[in-house]
Image 1 (tube, helix red, strand yellow):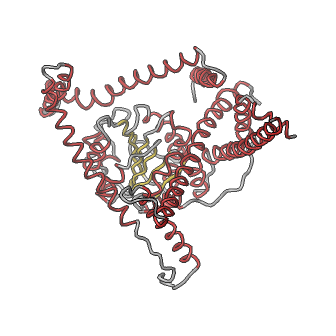
Image 2 (tube, chains in turn brown, green):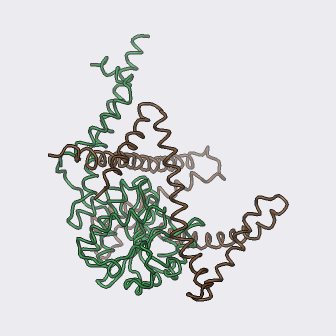
Length: 224
Length: 281
């Protein structure tokens, strides 16, 4: 059961945000600033309560009090690299912070290599699709023909889009210019799909708020 | 008629906002039965992946959304959890997104799990917020190798090791499927879970992010994906339990129809205004 006060606050804030559609106003700006403040405040509290306190402070306290394994006290060592970051505030001692920032960059670069290789390599393999409609186990079928046509379209889109971003050849040649135009068309189709989905997402935001206003706020006010 | 159309050009857009809002409320007030399309390959892929999980298998859900993307992610989480409950499959929930995510996940899952007779700790666990400010890659990697070092207590503060379900979940190899539902799921899940360990990963994302992930469906790096409320509605049709996704996608259909209509009328207005201008000249 939702608290009626929370519903009323939610409704007033929602209407306040919608009031921007009429014109920019102080109420809207107040809500905007308050939302930012609330998010930052809660972020600090939750990070402390769910991360730092149980995973860092409690093991140290437990180790020092003898109620937990002594290895918990090793978490005190995390203060050393953590405090190094603050040397960025000093011009003279800035170099000290590079010890820890270098470590972070190294870890991030290593993981980025692994991430990209594991993500991109299967994409190259998946780009090689069968084009022969007769190659299926049952010979020529209508489904096989449609799949092959789809794969052919995919291949054309892939190659022409890559060609569009290939800047090492002169584009006056008709044999290059035509596929490049086709590639541009493919990019526009992809961007159109993205735009259409963006509109759908924005619509979903509005629908969710409308649903909240109607079902949680207005309907209980006028039962029956 | 042409003069009337030309006047549309000077119409205050606020009237359009109001008309859209009214139009969107109608399907929420009156339930209008609408024809359902067939499930897309992406939706069907996730459904099949859940069906392929054995009865004693465990599914991991990363529910990393909050109010910002509730409009689509809530229905996407609801329908998959309902399917898991129908099949009596146990699941663990994490939140690598925002600090608010565990609470939103709890509120969405709790009523469905309770209705299905799921016992917290034995059948499902909300492991809570996982700090990932330094980047998702190290967190997902660590999560895959040893879950218990990343989360030592669940969302209620109970030590992870004390929960019966978590005694069976140590590494990603103990999990049969990972379902990530958030505004824009990170491809790191694909690299560090499917790529490295071979555990299937599925996404639930906002409609506008979907074009970024289609390519991973095609390459089978993602086993399935729910795209916005449409994906949730398709999934609800597959599990034969129309709910939030179906209702919201009905309203979205009205909204889309309104946009198409407004685009046609707007273009007619522009055409009429141009003609009137030419005649005036």
